[in-house]
Length: 101
Image 1 (cartoon, helix red, strand yellow):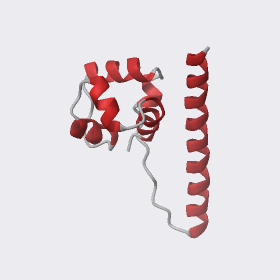
Image 2: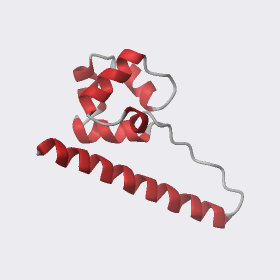
Image 3: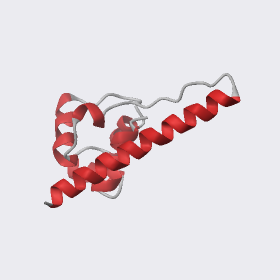
């Protein structure tokens, strides 16, 4: 799943449907891109970056959850994921604050 894309869409547009309309893309195609099932075209990538005002590398990163062989590994994995999500939220908030200035 492209968690960064999903979060940026929610922060900037409020919903995937609203963003799909703004981007001129079918909502089902957008959903499949967000889920990582299909790749966006170069034109779609450029449009998303333009509308969301974030770095393309960060925006289209696909997050996968590794399988954990033991409970301690699962706890470590959840801690790492939590830290990643916190970092993503801070990045979006910083971009929003920068845009306001």
